[in-house]
Each structure stands twice: as C-alpha cells, then as structure tokens.
Length: 179
Ligand code: X6L
Ligand code: MG
Ligand code: MG
Image: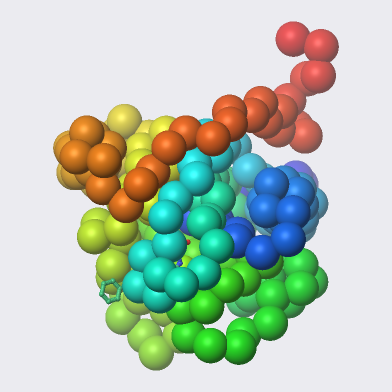
C-alpha cells in the first residue's frame, strides 16, 4: 500500500550566507525527496533585514507547506539533518547561516518538550516568518486569520524591512507535469 501523507505541517526557511537562493531551493528539493515528506506549497522569497543579531547580512526567508507521514520529532530531526547536509555550522547564537529550517506548525498539535515546542513559540512576533507563512497557510487552518492579520499589518508598517524578492513555481513531484 502506498505510504500515506496524512499530516500537514509548515516549515520556515532562512538563509543569509553564500548563494542564499540556491540554499533555499536545495533545501526544498531535499525536503521533498525525503521518504514521508511532500512539499505541497511554496511561498514567495522575501528579503528581510536581520532581527535579533543585526550585524549580519540580509536574509532570504520563505515558508513551505508539507504533507508528511512523519511524526513531529522525526520531521524536526530530518530538518536538522538537512541543515547539516547544506553546510550549516553553528557558531554564534542567532548568527549567519547557510540554511535554517524551523518547524512552525504540525496539524493542530500543541506540545512543549525540550526538543520541540509547537506551535513555534515565537512565530507570531516575527514578520519574516509570518509574511511568507501567510502565502502558504491553508485558509481553513485555525491560525489563518491571526497570521493574515498580523502579517498584513507588519508589511504595511514596513516592519523588519521585508520585501518580496522573487516568486517561484513549485511543481510537486507527484503532480502530472504536463497539466
Ligand atoms: C529582541 C531580542 C528582539 C531577540 C528580537 C528575534 C532573536 C529573532 C532571534 C530577538 C530575536 C531571532 C533570522 C533573523 C535570525 C531570519 C531574519 C531569530 C534567530 N534568524 N532575521 N534573525 N530572518 N530577517 O531567518 O529568529 S536569528
Ligand atoms: Mg530561525
Ligand atoms: Mg532554527
């Protein structure tokens, strides 16, 4: 029987070292290539001023929706493996990185463990997360309205210097290519 992809999750991506766009595209391709993970929606790519530790290059941030057969901790561990694969080296906290993959939401799961807190505990305060998330979050998701309101307000306020940098097309590997 075919593997079932019954859970819906949202992942935030960021890069501010080297070929930032290539790192984002590679991360999406690697995520989609994982057994039990299918990338279903891809946001625009936004260029964003660094937040937290500001003396570092500008980021490209985006978000993806995935369907997955993996449980939250297995999805998280897969993300961390892909960060290493894409050359992430953790020097200083909040410092520059080739790729950052943050698990934001997984179904309606709420959990608070040392390894993982869901929903991501700081996502609603970060416009560089909310604006891309708004591009991909399902209108039926319980947080859709809050994400929409907050991200639109942040964009209008010019908060965190967020500008749409590029839009890309994503064809899921499982979709017919000719349609
Ligand atoms: C006070 C203290 C206010 C700390 C904010 C915010 C710290 C965000 C860390 C903060 C504070 C973070 C990205 C980034 C980082 C990113 C952009 C973080 C972790 N990651 N800036 N800064 N995009 N634009 O992906 O999110 S470091
Ligand atoms: Mg992050
Ligand atoms: Mg992270």
